[in-house]
Length: 310
Length: 293
Ligand SMILES: Cc1ncc(C[n+]2csc(CCOP(=O)(O)OP(=O)(O)O)c2C)c(N)n1
Ligand code: SF4
Ligand code: SF4
Ligand code: SF4
Image 1 (tube, chains in turn yellow, orange):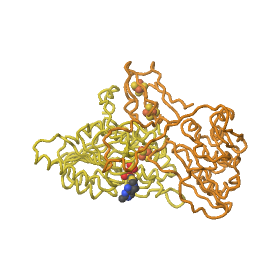
Image 2 (image 1 turned 180 degrees about the vertical axis):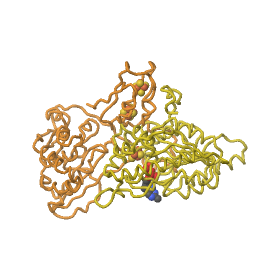
Image 3 (image 1 turned 45 degrees about the vertical axis):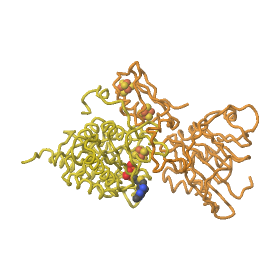
Image 4 (image 1 turned 90 degrees about the vertical axis):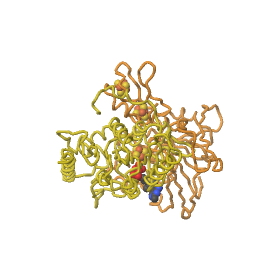
């Protein structure tokens, strides 16, 4: 998709649903991903947004950057609020017959999704609400100053898991949210990345058409928390994908499909050494990460080659 | 200045380390047996946006004040561009000191301010670039603060710098010392013909003017907010190299690059935060980032 043509950007709608004047950091990859998500969703959408960077930078009361219906929720209940809205719409339909085709979307950061909001999300997926959940994963609690989450990768230095004399930073491996979502037997799960606009828009459009819950996990480059130059935002996301650190795939009704398969992955070192949060890693630690990345990548590939009924 | 309490306001941009400057100042003062406080001002603004940090230093007793600082004795401006954007001398006490990082001449800067203040100027950017290899001047500016006000002693910074920067403490300390040597001190007068300056003042509604439930019906009204003054560089287009692909416009986090009637692209500098993504991603290198004057 990304290599289709140089002229593909022309096909993307000019309409923006996140107005300029928002307060995201210079070079923020998360707001970039949000722009693409909203372009693909369009006007007939109701968004329930957990607190976090995207909520804070878009809604400094009495201002708002949103040009779609949007409600700010707490940190932990975006999926629960979305469930309520979706049920309310169903009730309206029962009472009044026809209502517009409105899609309900819940969104939050990795902290809101994989940590504090996980049970609300699990409940909403299990109950089968017709909604999309989008996780903007910048791999830490960035809004409050780079605290570790369960999505922070092994070896990254954060303010609550700092690297130093006694610690190498995060010592646990990144939680696999796509697999957790898929374990709810929902129709559509996908991963994407802020450096791949057409991939994001393709997957969101697809999720919009699904009846029932879908879950999209978007790796969103955060130059502030990853400690890299703001001009490198796009490059960093590409490196995450090309090194296999963050593979892009879909899980449709349980069936895996790798979207970008690289016969030869770039070494993870290219990705790790470009970011300040990994600066302290030793050769051995990098080798350990390399090994894990290959194992996980092969797993997804293996699952992708296995077709239903075989 | 015979004061029981000295209050300092730091002006920087998110990511430039104004908060670190304030913290180091407080630690140095505490090292000298004084009492000190350092705190930032919080807002939704991020990297690149103008931000504030503050210090309170007392010699007689612990600092028990917990309010904001409205009338500082000292103002330190870390980012040279802020002088023309923000009223940096707002509330500065008569007899107070204004310390500015700028490559401009003292005479030129004097034209910008009208008040009974001391002015200290240092070109911290060139010192930092030379000694630290980067244009990050928060530690360098501590030298100017020391020279202009003697609120802390240069040697008291040694330990806090080592704590914070480890192996890089030495070069930071050097930068600090060199800034102290190169700081030019002069006076500003309240009278005389001064360059007129005007600043946008944000007008917020009162709490009882907000609609119930904090509903905002004026969708996308952040458009009235200028984020363009966050930037320290801006993109310039070389149209002869442009193939009109639109990639730059797709990758702009501000959504502020638009196609013009002639088919070429331009950024709306009212919003552009100067991230440099467009220049980086343009296939044909038709975009160049240029430092703000
Ligand atoms: C229950 C609760 N705990 C803590 C907070 C403070 N808080 C607001 S946003 C945030 C971090 C958000 O992190 P994440 O969800 O990863 O999103 P990001 O900011 O990284 O986009 C925290 C801790 C809160 N609002 N509510
Ligand atoms: S902290 Fe990171 S995610 Fe949050 S606004 Fe800044 S760049 Fe974006
Ligand atoms: S990315 Fe470069 S070539 Fe493409 S439209 Fe922008 S300036 Fe022109
Ligand atoms: S530098 Fe380019 S990409 Fe960045 S905000 Fe400005 S116009 Fe947009």
